[in-house]
Amino acid sequence: MDVEYPAIHRQARAENAIILWGDEMGMRSDHALGRTYGKRGQTPVVPVSGKRFSCNMISAISNLGHLQFMVFEGGFNAGVFVKFLRRLVRANDRKI
Image (cartoon, rainbow, N blue to C red):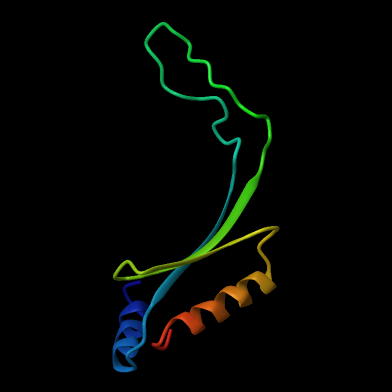
């Protein structure tokens, strides 16, 4: 960060480009299944359906907080990444 990033930042500024920071994540609907707050001494009862699902997302955010994301099914692989990159390029009028 101290050595390489300043050079990347200078190059991006010279080329009117945007720097994006990317990440991928997955989450499940049963992460905290049946947990909630309640009055002290009274165990809360939370009805649940028992149906589980998962969601995957890839995102990119700029230094100014501009966020772009894509939700997808299945595992994260090269095809998903390329699809996301193509969407990034199409959605931005600046060099990335």
